[in-house]
Image (cartoon, rainbow, N blue to C red):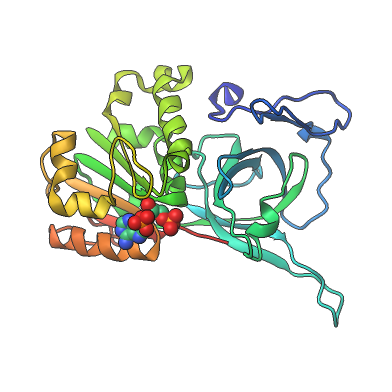
Length: 305
Ligand code: A2P
């Protein structure tokens, strides 16, 4: 079942019982690796099982999941690599950053979606990981983009820019999302069309995957997808914040405007998006919630290296 449940991108093949070298298929970038034979050497280490480069700025990867790790879909963990040794002491310290887990809580692996910052201390190196490599993963999940931080509602909005879609990649594969709401609308704004591809494929996968169909059936129709670009011409252009303020978002989707009685929202993106969305949502009468005090919307910044 776990094998069948493993969601997009399904890239792992256990090759042999002996350690086999990682292989990259240049046509589809699907990678194979013998994870059974990988030997951990770092503290809290996990083994990379697949890597996919979406653009020269974006990549996603999957790693083995610690047997003891429990998390709620939407949470984040600290992950990273060993830093360079200190020239004085010769000792190296872990270089860790917060990353939203992009896979759902039921998945037997963990997926992450990352930007590549050319001079970023972590992502300048992390972008070169290969299947079979190890990363450090501190198994202490936290975060506010969780169902527990919202009061019950009828319609759930996910507002993301760039890699801020990662926690929602988890939540749109989480059955509770479909059980708790009548309608789920994923809004994703990126600079160009290529940067939307991770989300586009993900939504397509969720809607057509056999296991998701079996689990959720017609409930999958509750999920709607609203992608926009800001710098490259596409079918829908503009920042989601502008489309919200003008009301175009609602007229394009053919839905009623957001109200605190029916709507709940989760926001994840740049500081600018978060600040602007807070003002818009508060203006519409929604209050910010937290794990300890659930309300109508929650915000988390998208983490970058
Ligand atoms: P824009 O091209 O107008 O800056 P980035 O790749 O820099 O993280 O940005 C991702 C997307 O988020 C871009 O399309 C960008 O639009 C958009 N964006 C940046 N700031 C805001 C904001 N305050 N509100 C809404 N969208 C934003």
